[in-house]
Image (tube, one colour):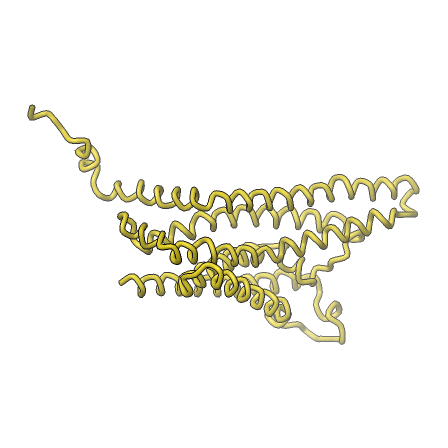
Length: 280
């Protein structure tokens, strides 16, 4: 009889430091399951944009090059070339502004709805702290956003550079400036943090949705207009193209990325501070 043990004995012998990990995974798993529909929509969006880009690269571009080969490079199918440029421009806009949708979803569904319905308060009574609740809420979509936007950045860069003569968007246009590097990833994470903060501050889904989307729209448009001011130029000669060589893309892009990441960090810190203050 002395050898009898309770089901909890093995877990006790492993020590308290190992019991923390399953709980963390459980919170992340619950967050992923709760927002499974949104993750599926995000996955479908990434696949749709990726498929569209691949179609342009392999099908439309092939038609352009075939037309040029048929007449020894002395002609081009203008309709196909314009279709390539127009479609790539449309994709660039959809990808560049995806942060608006991320912010709206984060404000409404990620935090605002849970606080409005009391789901969050219930979770805090079930052996999960508010800080861990918010961490799990942010971690799962953050991973999905980083992976998805990275795929879109790589594909967009590849297709954009495939044939510059057939592409209407120049490197200094707002959409290529965002979509050709980590700035797109930074915008997505910033939208997530701003949306979460709006949801925590307002504690209602619809107002948080509106405020988060509005803030990201303003920030995105403002930075688009002022990106040129983030890196000095040797001279301005009357036109943007002459005053900014293509070699300035990465300095401008990385400075803008740093600005967006700084706002992301501030919004994330403010969200945790506000949550801690309200749950003391």
